[in-house]
Image 1 (tube, rainbow, N blue to C red):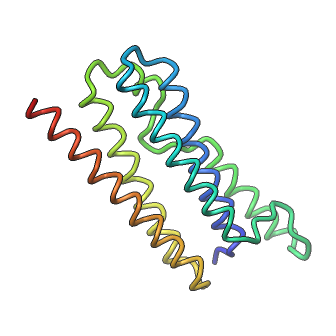
Image 2: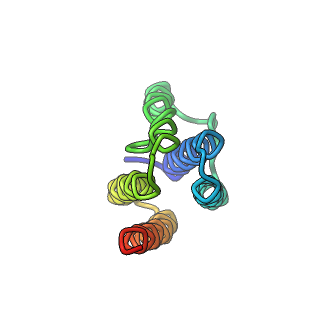
Length: 156
């Protein structure tokens, strides 16, 4: 079972990974409109990281953990350290069309939703579950927004 601290650490790392990937892609992309959208997505990921950090109890070395708990937490953090799911800065920057960028971003947001839903099922703390649900709702709104942009791009 994951603790509040585990969920917090995992979620903050995933959001920071997404932020970093979006920013790297924004620096590489040749189209100003795409760069602006990538920077906006990065800001959203950073905002989500702050929300998760605000849950509290995000100590990376809390006192009182057994050696097995510390090892498990360390392994879990290492697993998500570089995880950006379907999001790749080079692919985002190299997307010739904004529709390619939008497809990749939707896939990332959907992967993040699935991961947070998985985590929510493992959390006993109702406050953390509610916070995860709120972030999942925001990620769903991002998917709707990105899909709307893709539809407009396709129609245009």
